[in-house]
Length: 169
Image (cartoon, rainbow, N blue to C red; front, side, top):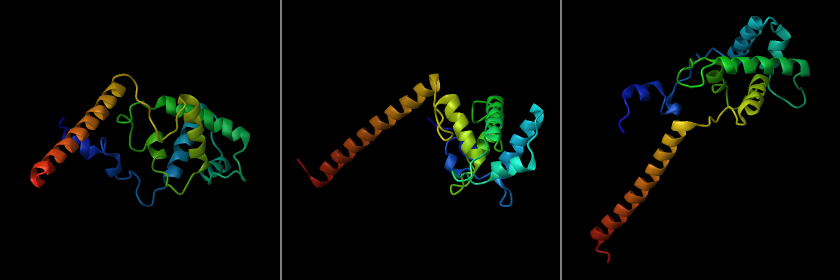
């Protein structure tokens, strides 16, 4: 199967080649907090400056998020996830879900921890895994099996080629 160039150029196939949509001076955590803040304003209960600071802070069991803010943030995050398109290719590069993937590996802010909890509650899986369903799952499994069969055939051909080359019997 030959894939069109646009798939590779947009990073849809090889996600590790995709550049961050955030400039070096932009912070994905602040962007996430602002997106959640906009959703809170739409819901009629805006986040305070203290709430924003708590959500942007590093997650720590010694300094947990207050229970009322946890519940409010989880409800807002659920609304954001439900409003976003399910297909990752239809979402914008700076959407809430996409922005979660650009938070640094060394950071685990409260907003990411709460988002991870919400995704586990909604679908039983973490943010960083997306279960396939239906025809996509069937196609993915067919590709996996095809690659395994191809790998076995290539190894078999290499052994036969080496046998002819070195005169093995």
